[in-house]
Structures are given as structure tokens and as C-alpha cells.
Image (cartoon, rainbow, N blue to C red):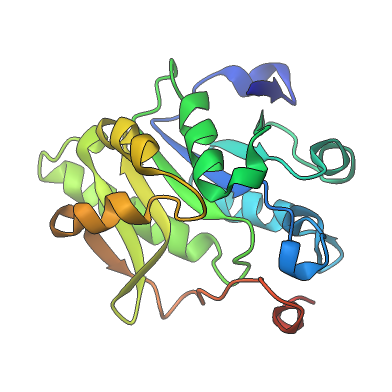
Length: 216
């Protein structure tokens, strides 16, 4: 894994919570079109996801790239993001989650808000609501590094998910194939604080040609 920074300032820890965007997928069911580069409102989809994290309150954003990473770097405006190359992206989302969490090691970040690039219906309102929920926890003397919060849609867990740093090692160990953090979250279901976001976001995925109708 190599990490590239798009500006001299992006290497600084600018806050205790970082956005972690998983954007490495090759779009196998979309004819091999990387999801990061799918056009949405005139710009690559990856830019919209970065804006959702930033506008939602994450000053520092790490973006994990894989399929056609050089083209994503060239075509997408990702200024001030930390760009993380995942050479093992074809192994599935789990490898990207591991790469992204590893890129946060050694920073002052105490929690990561994980978002997927192929969920354009999830915007800054959902990110902000999850962050506000962690702020409320801290007001009750609940350490941020121990936090485990997830957006929910009609009570069903979805993204974004906030992982305190105390969970990163366990998440990475359980992240295999395309399951991402699902195994870890299932094992720790009793510890997750669900944050209802169904009134401010839609948790659909862009996985198939039919799903492209969600894009503008």
C-alpha cells in the first residue's frame, strides 16, 4: 500500500474524526467501469462522496483507490484528500477497509467515519447526524476511541459507520472479501448505537446497469 497526499497540508491531522471513503471497486457488474468515475451531476461520483464527508463535518478525508487509480487521480478533484492506493482491491471491499484504516495509523485521529463511493443518496446530513450522535456520547463521558455508531434506515443498519480507534484492529482482522465490516458489526451488535437517517438520506447502491438511473 502506498499513500499519496494531494497537498502539503493534507498530511496534518485536522481533527479527531476522519472521513474514510472506500472508492476502489472496479464495477464488475457495470461492465468494468470503476464506480469512482461514474458521472453524477457532471462530475465523477467520488467527488460527491468526498463532499458529503467534508460538508458533514470531516475535515480530513482519506480516499482508498484501486481500479484505474491513476485515472481517478487525473480526472477527479480530490484536493486536500489523503489518497490511499490499494493494490489488492480485486480481493474485495475488505482489503480497502484494511488499507484505509492502516493509513490512519500514527495520526491524531480517534475515529473514522466510513462511507462507500457508490451510495450517492447518502449526503452530508447523514454524516453530520452520526457525528452529532458521537458528540452527544462524549458529553456523557463516552470516549470517542471506543465509539461504534451506525446510520440506520427504518431501523436497518447502513452507512456511514463511525468506528472509534479501539475497534480498528478488530475490524481489520475481520474484513475479508466483499463483507467489509459486516462480520465485526454483527459480532458487536449490542455495542452499536444506531442513528436513524432515513428522513435525510437514501441507502441505495449503484451496483447494476439498472441502478444507474439514480445518477443524474
